[in-house]
Length: 126
Image (cartoon, rainbow, N blue to C red; front, side):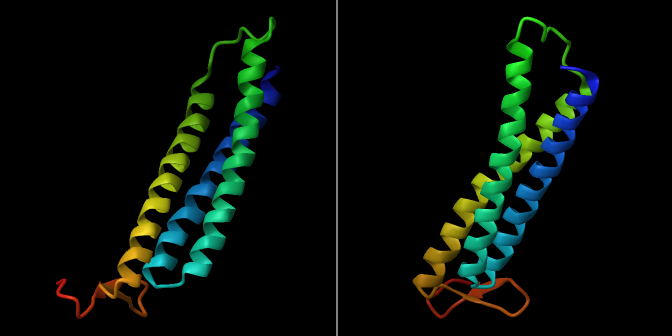
């Protein structure tokens, strides 16, 4: 793998990882506002971006494992991997947070507010 290909991989890890993270954060806001259909759509987009990034990550791993792939890992590649890992963590946490919003909303404990937040309902939470 030449330097240009390695830079392309890093760029795609950063771009797709950033897209996945942004969609997951937006999905949390949508769920807090009670818009679960939008949250689901955004989480699907986050998953798609993670899959795209994973494809580039797999390409990098395959290149490193090849006989001529003995290049040292660059700081730029570490930066790209960092973006991807942060996106994966954010996505995983968003799944849990959205699930909690659904559960609390379904139990009447939290109700959506116009500002995108949620507030305690009449069920005794304050």
